[in-house]
Image 1 (spheres, helix red, strand yellow):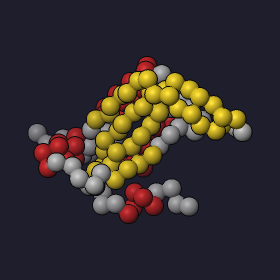
Image 2 (cartoon, rainbow, N blue to C red; image 1 turned 135 degrees about the horizontal axis):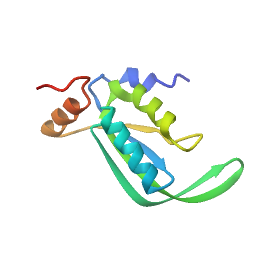
Image 3 (cartoon, helix red, strand yellow; image 1 turned 180 degrees about the vertical axis):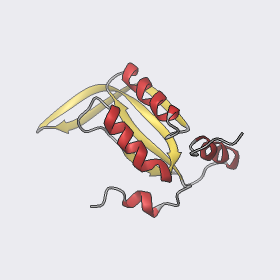
Image 4 (tube, rainbow, N blue to C red; image 1 turned 90 degrees about the vertical axis):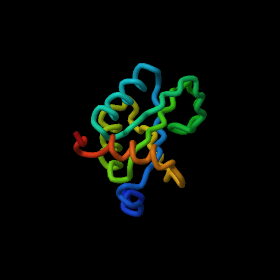
Length: 121
């Protein structure tokens, strides 16, 4: 399966929400800041206190994690995913993309401006 099929299916300026989990608040904040600093995301909510139950290497595990809710545009998904993989402490970081069905016009305009390659003066 093509890992970037979703990116091509969406219009480049389509707003997306990406879920990424992190092992702790410090690494979650570090990831969030790096994504926003690089303009790969306009905003990242860092939500502590998430309990994740999952199967890993044949065993059911339970971990306390931090959820990152990343707001970006489809055109940035490739770079966003690569940056998460580069910086993330997990060998298989969560990266789940949701297409935002509706976003208010002022918020959408702001988000697109903040993830643009260059900022307007």
